[in-house]
Image 1 (cartoon, one colour):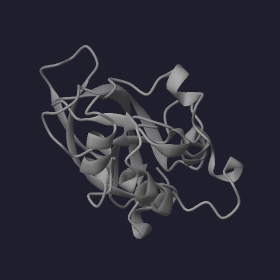
Image 2 (cartoon, one colour):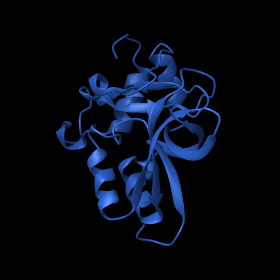
Image 3 (cartoon, helix red, strand yellow):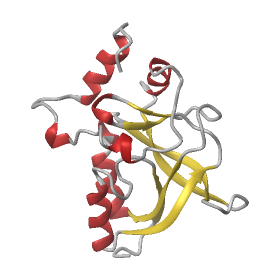
Length: 174
């Protein structure tokens, strides 16, 4: 990779996966030698995976709830990690990057320690409850069709404000 500094293993489960709306960033990181695809992986323990407003997928840090989640594992340079953190809104409290244990699909006996982008703790559990505690095993092609890219959202759209409004609304819309 381009930098001789720390490499971080990042588990992607949503729009950063191949064939989804933000994979172009991963492709760019690979071209810049700031990321390497390591294969298809699954979470060792169940975690909730839900789809929020604008079709945004969220992994929620509630170990033992939901399902084992399928995704992709990448080794990412420090420089690449800065770009991923920016996309995921780490600095504004949209997501937080936390440890997760995985195994390579088909090789359940060998655990891999990585990190993943989880819904921020300020709203993750409430989102899980609001979505009826029903989660997915994978953010697939069908779910990806509902994702609205940042540039395609209404001008002035504030995702955190939208989440707060959604969570405080008592109606059953999703």
